Length: 280
Image (cartoon, rainbow, N blue to C red):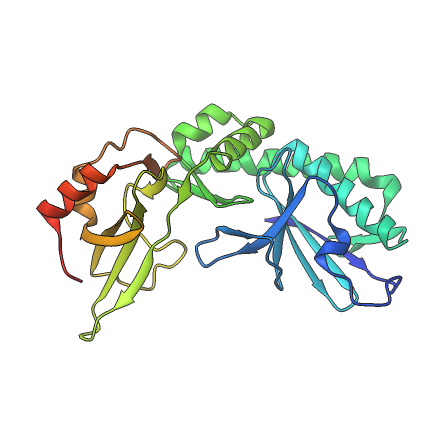
């Protein structure tokens, strides 16, 4: 769910407008890769922009011809909702525009406080519905796309957030501001058409890995085996089954509902390779 804003460029700029034209201090941007992780400072058809001082989910931005589209994901924190409309006003002022389109209706600056109230209420209602769905076992967990990477919320996380949008924002920020590498699944096909997945873990780098290997947002591909490859001294040194990896590492450092943080040194990696190494 999202709140959509459209801003029409009246060609104040002689050239086509770019992301650099509508980014101001303390803002970051980029595009999402196939694992929904931010590739920062890269432009594309669809980008994510956010305020580095207080980010949670960020905003989707697209620029095409004379039209700028912005989307505010729901639910999100009150701070991000407020900053979203500050950013809308900034763009409009930059283009000398006094009106914009919100949810297919004409919108004006004097009604922004009303829009903020509506979006806060919608965010609260959506967050509370998520809590109800989790408590009723409709879902085991719910993923929210963050400004930097996806975050999985389960019953424990939602109980801590307790319907508070600012607690939601703090949780999203705390996860994404950690100095960790969010690993992705790499999928390959053998000559016999069997499919295997590989995560990569680099020596001494704190990394976010799943309790259960999976392809995010794609249930159509059947993966026959899951593995993890170790990078030691900047070289891909060996691969072991993911199940053996899970059985031999500490998984108590929780990242979110479906991921943990792990860091392995050279010695542990080498011992795991000696014991479980496989050829792919």
